[in-house]
Length: 377
Image (cartoon, rainbow, N blue to C red):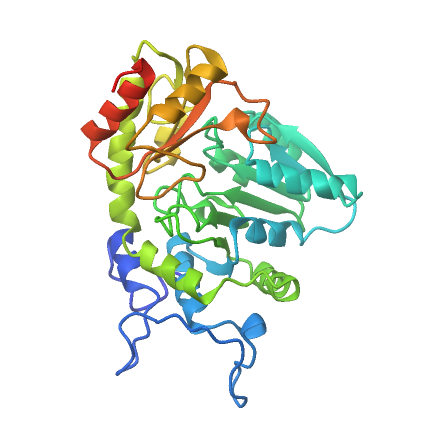
């Protein structure tokens, strides 16, 4: 669904309004908010018979919201990895996959698992190697981009890469989790697939697992729904309901968290205890010019290296009080973790900390972080 073709959204000027307006049942007497529908089957006689095959109104509300935001049609999955696996499921035996060198470890693990079984071959490229990506699109079957990347926050030149010629059967997919649909719309840039982990910013409260895959191509939409059905990767009723509820305030949360992140990134970049700060909004960031031209906002994720190596970084994680020592990102609370301590991430700098900035008061956040880095408090 596209706001340009839906009369309910045609005159809305802001995605913040879309988030509130989409996914409603507008029939007189209907609940204002679609309730969770914990149903596996339905009375026969209509097009809806079994939830795994035909969906539920709760899923469809979430799919409408994200589809409108992305400018296409969205398919909801039980987790982010379930959605990613459904995209990989479209590949034929012997396919060629191109992945970024800085990539979510779950995606890298899925790709390696398939390669070990002879399903496909993998080629890795630096996120900012635009010429390499353009060249690779000529014969790749799946071009999987992640921008900004996780956790080095490199921004890919999506406009140039998506515009490059590729095989008619190829799929160019963008993991848009860090940017979100509010800051970047890959389908409008020419991508075939826009993916987001709804566990993160869409849900926004660290209480659900879900994944969203958006497309414009009808053949891909049908194929993704079939993969979900056959593999049983359907979202739960409560999870879909919570994701819809979280999406309503996504614009407000992102605005506050992005403002916090910009301030923290600037302060971290001049802190004596920090060796390196990575944030696309900083002028010193290697891909800042692309980020400025391509993104509406710079996101809420900062990665930075602490002087003193892994021991010092672990100490910061143990000392924070307001900021939570936890994995994942995109929620109302700020979280921090040392990424190299996670299996599959050992190639990262040992002292790299990934900070997901939440909506707390900025001075409280900074005081907590500064005290943890300087061993105060």
